[in-house]
Amino acid sequence: MTPSLCYLSMLYVSLITYVKIQARANKKYWGGSIPWISARYFTDEHTIKGSEPITEEGLNNSSSKIAPKNSTILITRVSVGKFAIADKDYAINQDLTALVLKKSNINNQYLWLISEIVAERIQKNATGIGVVGVTRDFVIKQEIPLPDLETQTQIVAQIEKEQALVNANKELITLFEQKIKDKIASVWGEDSTAKEEIPA
Figure 1 (tube, rainbow, N blue to C red):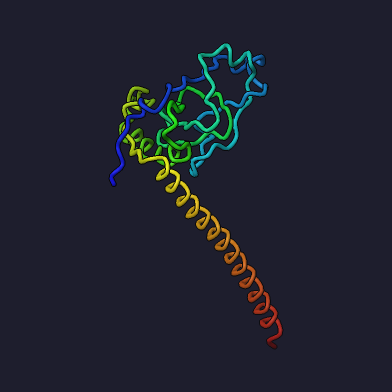
Figure 2: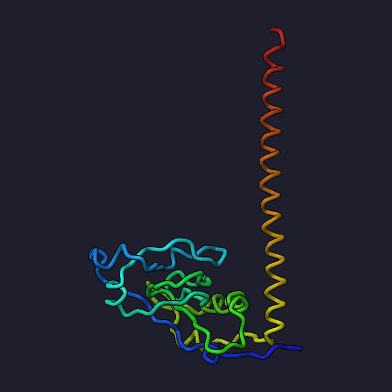
């Protein structure tokens, strides 16, 4: 059965607005306990690695909301084309847009996986001189395939299983590469000794 299509605007409460902290030199705004992220903290594996700490005062003196844990965060300006699922609450900068679920008919992990489609569209449609990007209106008008929850769960489970296999193979490849290097080093050492023993 072909899954139905659904506009993002039907699934989300809103697109979370960004944190823009003007005075980086203002120590009152930085060094607190609230993790703040920009595009630089997005990995190629669609995760978030690292953050900068801001204070409550820094948060309150910005046009901000917090992107909550399990929300999907898209890069919609400058370094477009990446996305990640929030592993905890984050304050986000002006290049990011967070999506917060409105309905319970979508699995957070499924949304994270399907967001690759949206991220690719953002990358293809980003416009601008100097600073490229898309509007938040563009984001909420995107359609995504939306099967029933059971199917979503099955898709997530299958992909996680395949990813675990890929990760295991990566570890195996690394192990064998090291063994090959060790063997080459060992053989080279033996050859060197043999050459030294050959009489002139």
